Image 1 (cartoon, helix red, strand yellow):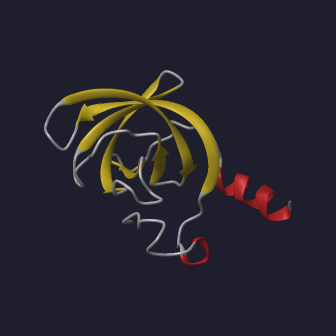
Image 2 (cartoon, helix red, strand yellow):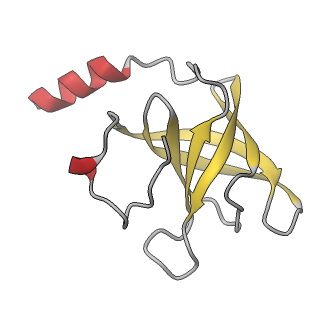
Length: 119
């Protein structure tokens, strides 16, 4: 699934369950100028196929593969979109898991969605 920018669609039309979070992650790779970087960020929401990162203070290119670590677990993610400077999405990056199955979060997203729906 391609992760749309938050401005391109609203949450009601998204096809996959997303769970709001504030999980700390470490992200590293190459930025848009092909310079290596490492940043501490947080995950704003997650789905079974990807996440939206907050606090990325670099311009990243769509398609770039990054490494992400949470709680000792590492995965590769592909940048799908990156918020533009000066926009409400500045510092946000939509990523998709490179591997089809990734359990880095140790969460049952379906159960989280059901619980959130009852709240």
